[in-house]
Amino acid sequence: MCDYTNKNIYLPYLTTVTEVIDETPDVRTLRLVFQDDKVKETFSFRAGQFAEYSAFGAGESTFCIASSPTRTGYIECCFRSVGRVTEELRRLEVGDTMGVRGPYGNSYPVEEFYGKNLVFVAGGIALPPLRTLIWNCLDLRDKFGEITIVYGARSEADLVYKRELNEWQERCDVRLVKTVDPGGDSPEWDGKVGFVPTILGEASPSADNTIALVCGPPIMIKFTLPILEKLGFSDEQVYTTLENRMKCGLGKCGRCNVGNIYVCKDGPVFTAKQVKAMPMEF
Amino acid sequence: MKRETMQTYITQNNLNALLDSLIEAGVRVVAPRISAGTPLYEPLSNSAEMVMDQLPRRSAKEAFFPVCEDIMSYKKEGQQVSLTDIDPSRFPETVMVGVRPCDAAAIPVLDAVFSWDYKDEFFLERRRKTTIIGLACTTADDACFCTAVGISPSGTKGSDLFLTPLEDGGYACEAFTEKGEALITGNSLLFSEATSSKSLPIAEPESETFDLKKVKSWLDEHFEDPLWDGIAVRCVGCGACAFVCPACHCFDIVDEGTEKAGKRRKNWDACGFWKFTHHASGHNPRDLQPKRYRNRIMHKFKYYDDKFGQTLCTGCGRCVRICPVGIDIAAIVEEISKK
Image (cartoon, rainbow over all chains, first blue to last red; front, side, top):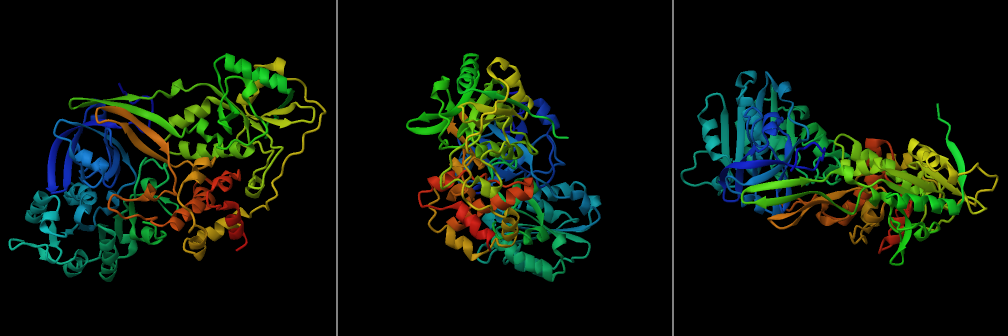
């Protein structure tokens, strides 16, 4: 048996799947509880950090830790089934065992955001890396100014965390602007219709004393950054995460680099200023 | 203050006797030997297998970083999984003999990767348990370019003990570390006073010395450059250059087994492979071979230097010898150094 005293940096913790939630037809959330009591007690992480999740026999996949560090006793991951490992992870049921290595990487400098307004901008499956921070901030609500969330997906069916979108919509201390791409709406849709960058422009949050946090597919980020610039955001006020392919998560295996920046160690959280200084290799 | 090195002498017969006594005592002795017609660094069963006059086809790195190694095993019963860890303390005491200066110099380069921040005990425990006996080169071929990257065919970087072949058939020995000294003092009857016999001629590669600072400063400014499209169009992405390289260290982590039981392994990987950086979404930041080859050059002569202040190439020339399409990294770096 493993007692984690051999200092094997590749050895995952064992966790039990305690909840399985289908976010969309192919995106799933797993809630995980560490099996080792000591690990359960001592495991801590910061919003923005990621982990390596094992489906034993298939291998490991890299995702962010999607739950908030303020919610202890469990962690959650959220993934789309697109490959061998994620197909296997999808087969896990409540009570099954899954491996987790982490937490790895840097994190959002949450304390630096105290007293500021926050604008979250997310597209599709990229809400989980912001959702960890959204709940982190909502659980410390007094420490922040206005909180705006602009979230969109191709269609209503592609929106993740639908139950939480409703919760945010009902809160009076959060401004949620949800949208679907043109053609992705049903007659019952009560949100906006349009691409995320356009809807962000219309929502027009003030850049004054505000931090913007942007996660989405490269195309969304490409069109969102100029909108933020137009709204008056400087590149230091904008944060995003990079999602390169990784294996070790430990700064050794050599594949996640963008130029001389190692996403697993130097990231995954970067300011727009840092991203703009990188070579186009992500 | 630089400490005094221990200098002594050993005959070929006594070197063989030393290795045989180590093997007898259960020490793993790794040296160049002929395996299926090819010289490779491999464990010896006796000293007579050792060949000192041929550069091994693969580098010395695999003594510390095997091409494929188990990092744990798993077993599933019902909903429970049990993991079995690998205990690095079971790795054998090892003496490596006849390690070429280009190979020995790459070992401290790998140390930096496996020991910064998170410690990879698979590599580090093997390192702690290994004594490296370097050997000066008395032969070089057209592909050798160690001197061009600041390594010498009589360079002692990375060696605990260093052997210089002498005209009388013996070796001048110099110890640079406690491990090297321990090997001499623990077997003092086999070593004798340094002799007046002259060293055999050391084989200096004929290539020019690169101005590595200049190469790096060009790379700092030329991530985008027509050069990249030109040099690697013919690269077939076979990854052989990375596999024979003493300093390349990229790896993959894969499960091998069934859903019920199996092993997790760390396998060598290469930045030349298309799949190396391929995202699950289908996006690939290094989607074309020239982008992958650029990463190879950048990592060796810029990124590694940015992080650890050294070059990730020791000029062994193996990648030049093995490339199926004749890509010559030395010629490329020389071209860059003249820009």
